[in-house]
Length: 573
Image 1: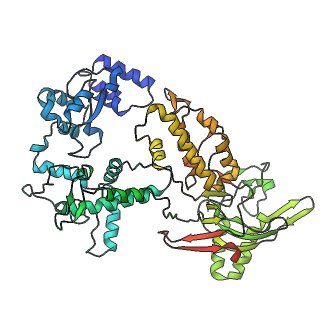
Image 2: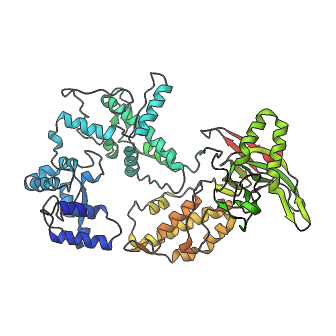
């Protein structure tokens, strides 16, 4: 913005330049309102009146072309104007109401780089008089998916399925539009279900577009694109290019080819009920890719011979007491062994198979199974060998599973987890919160500001209740207990994080909830809860002496879709 102001000195007065400099010094982010203020040269874009920066709350961000006409939330379709003017504008376009007075000002903004050509065109567009060429541009902008990943996926699917299959590309912004229309808040940090719900909305929107706008199928059905001639009739019916607006306005929508009711104004609740039902599902199938690793053989730093820990030789003929060595081994995959103990009885342990031994083991497995098992036993044995004052102590073990992948799903009593390594467990349970909790976290719905603190505390308590009931894994490192014990420290925080310039001076409740959600997510992400007195990264489930599993532990092997499972009880092996 500073560079823009420097290049447009003729139209930018000294007062505005000073305000921008002061803003840069005192604020940590340039919000949309302030951005529009500075790009409009501190003036109301519809009246030309000077805007006072200290009275910015009296101004609204208005859509140039109304939402009923085209769904466009970009800055190219938004301006800053006094609330009274915005309320009076309603669904009209600015060129009709303010064009005669303000068109020269809009042109000046364009010429000096303050607004884009597209924004200028929006300001001077009259929907009733747009040409067929412009109509195609509006339709194209709304219906054509531009993502290269989507295009590539559609191309792959087209090669797999027969020629009678039609592949519909639904722009992601339409999913967002549906979510906003019906208050279907997305909080990615809570769980992974939003992927499935977005897929469901995509199917709903794709069917709606396909049946409601048959003449426009070349725009969104893969492989059907054709170049329309300037004289060809491609009108969309009501002249609007917000193709979901008829749903939002609860109009009757029927299939023009079959007469099928796609959306009924008489009883719309059934459709909404079904969408809400899917949105509120407490359980959805989630599957993850299991992997092996083929990275470096060791942690690559070579440490000197006087290193305090145990070293791995650089080469077999180079003893560590002379040449130093590597500090740690990396594992290609995991294995599970059975052990017996007088106190514990029979139990199982997860061990790592070093990357440096993996290639040799794989070769032996193909050649001779007996030699392979013997070699694997020798690779694992050092993990159960200790040097004591009385001599070398070896613990007997039996190999139960010779190859277990990273992120293998395991159910051990009430605990459902993934194996992150031989010492790390990852949570595999999905957290599900109430709709109100999601709205409070997202801050999408404008709750009473005086109740913000209470609402955030209620969300913390809701999370706490679910963790106490279902997340037994979080007893590792005392995480569950700490979340309960440190509630008062959470309550003492302000609702929102406070800043002085760019520096954080007080962490807020909303920020802490997002950090808790990171640690509770079914993956390896960790949350930072130091501001409420929890020093250990939240969600770090490390068993220093290795992961132990009970006799009741079950390995769950899923198909890629998650629809099919094969369960193996370790005690049966």
